[in-house]
Length: 326
Image 1 (cartoon, rainbow, N blue to C red):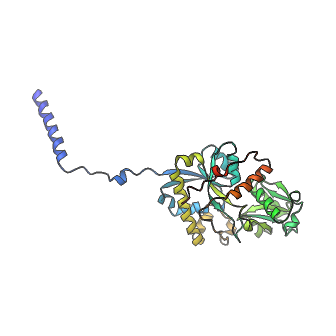
Image 2: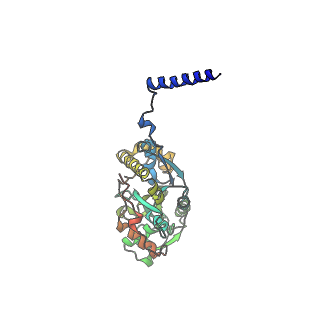
Image 3: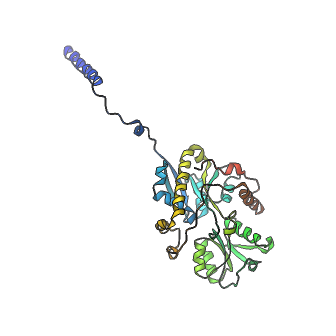
């Protein structure tokens, strides 16, 4: 029995020696073995035109090309978006600098890393509209008239700044809270609301139903822009993922600006444009890589402090991060 065990050990040992001297085992190439799983970024998305480059990047496979997975988390309102960000259930979103200021009033939680959409000549973002039944056609006609807005938001900020630019004084500008956009549109159409403010493309839909454009931010892009923002915790933990995301958005922006008609399916699939407008809506040009200026930040900050929304100066340098752009 002992002899049998010794023979078995000898056979096994010889087998190991022969296998070592023979052809080497097939190895997984280092490039395949060492590939890390791409990070996943969760982006809270409202059904707004500002998000179009993100959806184009997804459709064209650009996120994968730049080594990042992106998961869109649909939300129905800005408060819902902000709740998800606060609960760390979303990593980034399209929002406004005002929203970032409110997040950062005690400590830096959010950073704006890129313009999302910025008004340009002939392509306004926010529109001050008058009801067809009001007879109002110019900013002067809005003196003392209640204008439906979502108070404490970029819409109220843009409204006041545009009317001030047109010569109205603070006591001549009156706003009334109509938080829900469908309500604002319905009240405008019925004439119960003499004026209201809407973002495009809903503004275009309202105009098609008879509303009159009194003013828009196409001549004042410093007020009506939106931004892409990420939680600072996400940026600190995985800056390369955010860089990849922004590189993909940059490529998508180039594609969109070259021929937006190729992506009309995205407008309908993602409900970014009302169905009656799909065939005729003109997609605005999207901004190339860039972040809000310190002057733009400070003006919005000054307004928020005037309104009592903030009591402290929120740092531009800590809240706006241009270092991740391609």
